[in-house]
Structures are given as C-alpha cells and as structure tokens.
Amino acid sequence: MIVKQFYLNCLAHASYMIADESTKTAVIVDPQRDIDQYLQEARLHRWKIQYVFLTHFHADFLAGHLELRNQTGAEVCLGARAQTEFPFRPFKDGEVLEFGKVRIQVLETPGHTPESISLVVYDLEKSDQLPHCVLTGDTLFIGDVGRPDLMASVGVTAEELAGQLFQSLHHKLLALPDETLVYPAHGAGSMCGKNLSTDTVSTLGKQRWENYALQPMTAEEFISLVTTDQPEAPSYFRYDAQLNREDHAPLSEVMHRGLIPLSLDALLTHQQHGAQVVDVRNPVDYAGGHLKGSLNISLVGKFATWAGTILSPKFPIVLVAEPGFEQEVIQRLGRIGFDQVVGYLASGMQALKTRPDLVKRGYRISAQALAELLTTKTPPLVIDVRTTKEWESGHIDQSLNIPLPHLAERMQEIPTDRPVVVHCASGYRSSIAMGLLEKSGRNNAMDLVGGYEAWVKTWGHPSRKSQPECATSCAF
Image: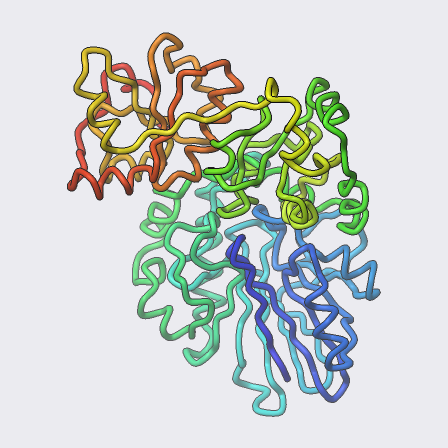
C-alpha cells in the first residue's frame, strides 16, 4: 500500500493518493481541480484511478472530482448524507471499500459540515486490526479541529454542528489507536480553522496530547471553545460549497474560453459593461502605473483567497498580467470556481504605451514621511485594513481599522476632503485597498511602503490605544 500527500501551498490544501501495487488500483481523496499531478503519478506507476472521495463539500476550493471522473472514469464517493446534482456512490458509517492490500473504512464524522466523513486506511499486508492512517478532511487538523460555523446560511447552527463535532472526535476518531497517522485536508494558512499547525501529518496520540481542542472538557465547554474567535470566512466560501455539489464545467473548458488575448479597445468595452479588471502584477509595479479602474490582486500573495474575497462570481473578469502568466492566473482562479474570465490584455501594460490618459499611478509614502505628516495641523487619516485582531495587537495611533473585506461597504466612513494613508502588514492588502479607493473616486490616498511592519521597524513598539471616536460604532 502507498499513501502519498500532495500539498498546495497557496490554498494550504492537502490531497491524497492511496494505491495498491498488487491490483494497480488508486484512490484520490479531496483532489484539487487541476488534476495533472494525479494523472502523472498514476501513469508513472501504471495505476488506474478507480475512485475519488470527497470528505465533504469544501468551501475554500473547488475540488477536482468531476475532472477525475471525466478523464479516468473514476467513481465519485461521498458520505451517505451528501446531496448532489451528479451521481455518486454513497458510503454509510462503517462501510468498507477494499482492494488488494488496502482497506478503507468510512466513518461519518459530522461537525464541520453535516456530510463530513473520515477515511480509516488499513495496510492489510501489515495488519487488518491496526489502521495505518486516518484521512480526517476538515474534521481534525494538526493542532486544531474544523470550524462549525460555515453552514449557518443553510439552516444549521454553529452550536448544533459543534455538538456533532464533539461526538465525532471523541466517539469516532479518538477511539482509534494513538499510533494512527493523521492526514488532514488543510494546514497553516487555511481559513477552515483558527490554530492550524505548519505540520502536515501527525499521530492521533500526539494530537490527543497537544491539540487544544482535544483536551479533557465537557461538550458544552467544547462548543463554546470552537464557536468563538474563528477568523471571518471569505465571502466566496458559500459559493464554492454549493458549486462542489453541482455538475459544473471542467477546468479544461474554463481555461480554453479564458485564454483569449484582447485588444485594449476590447478590454475597455468589457470594462464599460461591468467586467472586473484584475491586475495581477507586483504591488510595486501596479503603483508605478496601471489601467484606471483596475484592481491589484497580485500573484505573489494569497491570490485565490483575496480574489474570492474581493471579486464577485456574478461578473466577468478581464486580466492584466505580465505576458506568459495568463494561464497560471486562470488556473488559480479556477481552483476556487471563478470561471468567468473572458480574456486578458494582449501585451500587458505595453498595450497602454500610447494611451497615457488611461494610466493611473499610485502614491506611496514612507514610514518616516507619514510620521512627519501626522504632526501637522492637517494630518492624513490612517486606514488600517488588517483584521481587527491584528489591529488590537498593535497599531498606529489614531488609525481607523476597516478590515479589507469590508472596505467597499464602509467607504462612506472615509472622508473625501482629507488625505488618506492606507496600510496592512506588509503592503499586499493595502495595494488591493488602493484600487478600491480609486474606484470609489478617492484620489487622495497613499499606500504606506512596507506596511505596519515598516512602521514598527522605524518607530519601535506599537500603540494599543483605542480607535478614534468616529470608528467606535464600526466594529469588524
């Protein structure tokens, strides 16, 4: 038996291939949407991918179960409680899939979602009693457990799911031997929990000892613990969770219709009809000159997460990128189901060489210069677009905290007759904010170079004072 983990850093997502050498049979668990790596691995070892499992309907990415079904004929397998638009093989609690020296036992482990399952994997060549590993999906992470608050929109409360999660952990997963390897679907950086480790594998015994959510406590204490202080879920999570239930177009089709080079005039026509123009270059290059009305969501950071947070899946997307990066952008948007790319600007920013009237430069300011301005009679308003938790841990005195996901809806709080300096931790999110401010007609904004990290390096210990009175009613 072979178990291989595939880790996608940009989404902090782990998927798995379980294979049996004797029968040349392979199973894929929680695949990402671009499936070439699984196909290559199968070809290399002459395995046939016969099954693809989803441990649940993921909210943070669009899975590749349909792509695998279409290209390999693999049977899609889900927990028996799942409801979909496409045919699948339902597995009830305790049901087993066995081939060659591999046994996979399905455990229903609701809590993160109602249909969540975990897969207990046995290497029958070694033991038919002691499991080799358990693939826990988003039920149990390394250092954390799945958040139970993502299903409120479909009528299941966080408290109800947290109660189910407690039962799943204590009566199902913690009943397994301590030596059992734990393979989760996410690691540090995922928004599916609040304390995920950078480790991508552990043992059940180590988690029983170290994981804060597995310590001895009552069900009521557990429910309170896992339903508080969760990070705000990106707005696209609900969209992806639903899309994973649907029989949507394959990624290959999405790539084909998105890789269309557009002239500047064609792009402007799309923009005039409501298309979202996304500039994926480095924030420094964007500040140096960009198409008016475009938003900078750079490939160098958490591109998919912020694209899903800032963009709408209801409107077309047009790209501005360095030539040669267009395919990567469409693929990464496709990983979260944002399939509405209609083309990209041919030649990138070079297409604007003869149209300086369409180019907008971004204003940037150093920590030293900002400090000097803040001592004048008419200081700028400092907008901190980090999370509230980040702001509370330290901030520039008298700054106004408007977390980036809420900037567009709270734009009216920002005065139009006063200079504004926007910042985040290092400059990635503030570049997105600069684009949103520009689109709202605020042309008096500056981006703090290096963000809050540069401010602390320049001026030492941060302030932890309260927000100015004008912001006290605008909690994140």
